[in-house]
Image (cartoon, rainbow, N blue to C red; front, side, top):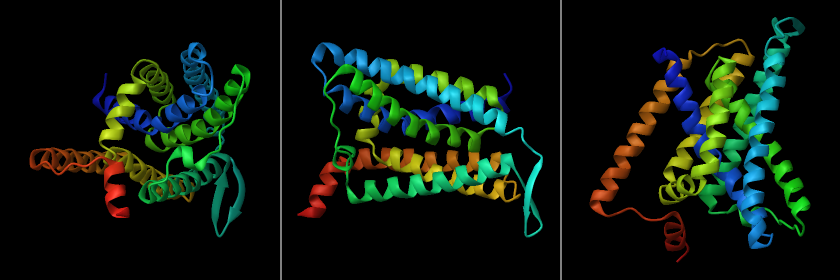
Length: 246
C-alpha cells in the first residue's frame, strides 16, 4: 500500500480512537443503569450502533461531497453543496473542540454535564442511539477534514469500532492516565476545523501540512510525557485539579 495512503489511514484511526473515548464513557454510564447481566450486551449494541451510524452518515455525505455545481454566489465566491458541508462542518468542529477544551480545563466531567436517566434495556438503547448520532457527526466531519478518499474513511470507521469493542477499557485507561493526549486530540480538531472552513471558502490547505503539524505535536507530547515520567512529576488529572482547589 502507498505510504501516502497509510499515513492518513493510521492518523485517522488513532484520532478517532482517542476522540471516541467520550462515546465509550457515555455508553458505559448508560449501560451502568441496567442490571449487571445486561450491561455488557448494552455496551456492545451501543458500539455497533455507533459504527452503523457512522457508515450511514459517510454514505450520505459522500454523495453531498460530489455536488460541485454552484448554488449561490457571495462576494464573488461560488458556493456549492460541498462547500456548505465543509464550512458548516468546520464551524461545528471549532465549536465542539472549543467547548470540550473548556470543560476539560475547568475540570467538568461527563457525569456532571448530563442528567442521565434510564430504566429499561430499550430506553438505554434509545438514549445510546441518540448520543451515538451526536458523536457520529463529530467523527465523520473529522474524517472529511483529515482525508480525501472515501474508502479510507470507511476503513478507519470500521477499524475504530472494532478497536472499541475489544480494547475500549485499555484505551480509556491510557487516556485517563495521560490526559494530555485527549487535549492534543481536541487541539487537532481545532486545526481540522480551521482547515475545513478554509476549504469551504475556497482556500485549500495541503493535507501534508496538517499531518506534519499533528505528528510534530504528538512527538513533543510523547517526549514531554517521558521526561515527566523520568523526573517523577506526572500527576493524574484529578489530582492536579484537587491541588488547585486546595
